[in-house]
Image (cartoon, rainbow, N blue to C red; front, side):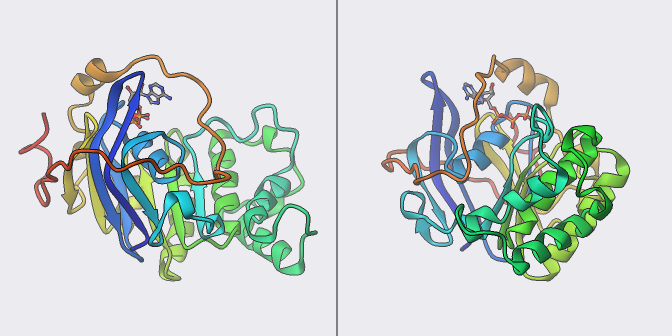
Length: 278
Ligand SMILES: Nc1ncnc2c1ncn2[C@@H]1O[C@H](COP(=O)(O)OP(=O)(O)OP(=O)(O)O)[C@@H](O)[C@H]1O
């Protein structure tokens, strides 16, 4: 199993955000995590990456408990967009090269293989000719592609992407879908959060819908985008609160698994959320 989240409980200020969520992802799967604003999608992927404080349950990456996991080079993580260029005086090539650090170590100089991987990743997202430009001059969609290239450059087995296509232009979405298709064809596993599937729809093998901190659907992808974002308004009104800044540093220096104390909740598999959503 590539990723196992078992009975995960995450709470902020005593308020449960994830309420005993379980999710297992096998090699080769392409899992879309869907749901309304504030339902807990980001928190679920952050918990899987050791970036949200688990007060119950357990996370395993490639079979290893998060606390003991050291194989961060096996994972490419793209957090929810904060802007790749915001205040960062780096070039496109430099940002993508950061994706090699977990693999080669911080002190060793870049090898020919590192440079090749960076060039390939830039090529894959259609930015090969922009490598020397500052990230800050790129459009939002292009900046998102830079972050995706950085994740891919590390040669990961698992890609975890939080809303990779949100607010991204159609060209960038198509390029990203192509990049993902090649990654999956080479045996890669993908978990991504999305509001709209767009060109990613044909790639998905499984959809997971989060509602109010619980998984209410785990199975077939929705037939169309009308069903991607269920009950958005109600859930948004009920759950949205001010969100403190600071999402943490990734990859974590050490795992952050906590004692397994969460309740197991029943996952309703195979039923699109109409039947089960609150
Ligand atoms: N660090 C935090 N501190 C306090 N509350 C938080 C924190 N992170 C998230 N939350 C709250 O947890 C709930 C779930 O947030 P989360 O970002 O996981 O939702 P989401 O489903 O990804 O939403 P969106 O689609 O809007 O990104 C929200 O009510 C949010 O305000």
